[in-house]
Image 1 (tube, rainbow, N blue to C red):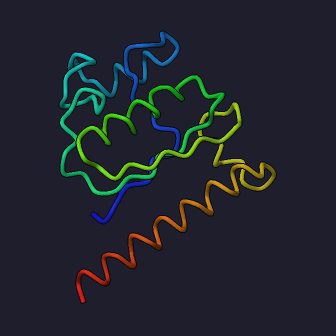
Image 2 (cartoon, one colour):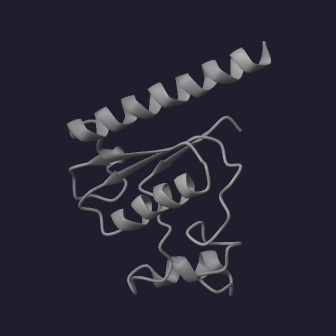
Length: 123
């Protein structure tokens, strides 16, 4: 893999009762702090470059920010982009939300940059 795009990642698995059914299904009986299932406790060394986009008003924003910091601590080229909107996965509203359009354009630039790097490395 050349890199990863994370749109409003849900990585804080212990915080909210509202997300508990989803978190429990994902965890499949693993403890929420198990590095196997939680990137906030895992060794992220060796991951490819990441672009993490977060809505500042999203209740899960802190998790995305913590993920970027953790990845950087492990030597990963992790880019964090914050957008001043209140909606989780705001990218879905690209047709009328300028911040969503901007975020998707940035994600496209990141993907093209990764593709160019991969092609140069292969060729």
